[in-house]
Image 1: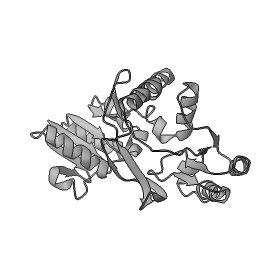
Image 2: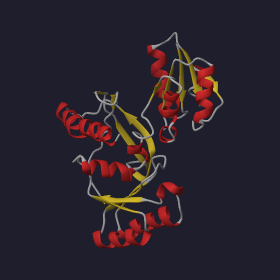
Image 3: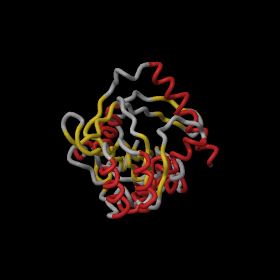
Length: 261
């Protein structure tokens, strides 16, 4: 079996490592592998974002399965392109990936499907966003709607910090086009867990949850990142919590995505 990993971050290293443990006789390839991945696979010097070149390479090299890690290629439709060529690939289609690539779309979907989420408003105009922050007060959370490598959510403990976050995203274009539409939502305090599910568009299976530590500084301080580290299992992820996540979040999200086509 020949398996291609798309991506070269810590997540893709973990995927490669685990897949290799489970399929030790398979041949593994990865796009521009990092130093940790390189000893475990053969490198493919094609960027993860070049879906056309990757699809062409996978077809020529008779790849049996492609596994995509990063959000960017998924948002650009790499799965759709591989499926058009009848190339087996693991990952959501471009339309399904919209719940990650557009927070505005995800929020609308959750509202329509009555999926629990923080109270929010979406803005594409800076003055209106600033006005609402003045009305709402702080603490508050400002998020770029598009993909920002995990750095697009800013927890603001003061109105001034929220206004600065809005100016940075919408005025200074700190995240490019990803920040031209923003979400402003209620600050929710508590412990966070990440719940994962593998699905075929209809049925799903929950994977073990993990806890991601996103803040850049020691002691949960500093700005959010794409993740400074994560671990599993998580003690607060009781069977009751997981059942609630499955019935109130995962299942209705799949139904809502299916209804949206």
